[in-house]
Image (cartoon, one colour):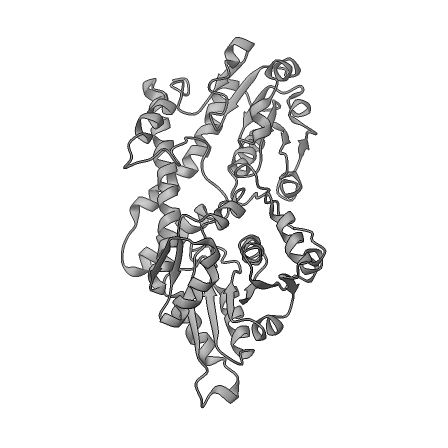
Length: 440
């Protein structure tokens, strides 16, 4: 099938490349001319394992192309995915300006049936607004006749760092449709993957995305709250999570205590769902508390550092990991941002290292020294913080790390080293929820 993807950011690019890989002919669109030039040369502007290889492969076999022209993409495609950004407003609402603009441009360039698909994360009832926008902006020659089209919702559930695998091996594909024709086209699009398909109406599909991410954020904040109790009562959050996780009704996933969630999805989607609920007349107090706990977890980690170091001013603090999670260069809402800013405000000097996110981090942080590797970063530090659990950090020589530091003190924000026996190597080790909290 000829398919267009409007928006060549993270979701759009992964979706386009993977749909090409399963046999469709894909045209990816973006207004950023420089990005399109690079993509045509096989250069990927984001870090996602396996993406560049698949992109080059499908460019070569001519199943994938890139353009800045929505007109070109619309005219030659049957299905058109809208995968543009929906950033948060100050109110927490999703800003749907880009979605409306794309819907309008698709409409003015339509000349036959199209299936227009929301891939961006949008609030319920956006589909109705997209359909209305298209109807109002159809070419004049179609005003007195009927140009058939469908609007549908197909939310994405891609995890950064494993997006290719998530797309190719989905646990479910959610489609919100209002016609049998649209459903039939969706089944054709995803047929090579043989997925479990959840077919519903558009409003339900839109809601599934926000509900899913908000529930996962709730699990994280719940476990982070448990970690606070563990520190106060001398309990071990890892054992609590293990005991809970064996219950099939709960499951072990997303029960890892740490310094809080980040990224482009959870913070934005929780905020948006709170606002969606308010507008519907329901006060989703639970989600507001989830958001509050997430912010408190970062502040609590900073207080722990301040308590154990005693004086933070002029101390050299090394940071391992800046991206919000491993296997991505995404710095959006990364916990490292608030933690580093808070420590700098107290006069700390920061040295940092991340395997791939440092170019993006340099656009955010000021007055930070970047190490060439973990050992260079640890050199001369009064303490070390682990904020992102990259595989590279699981294999460190801590004898070498400790000898390079001024003080062998490690604050493990992901409980990555809980079983490494660091105390036996002379480290003062502090994890999250391991039964040793802030001094009273």
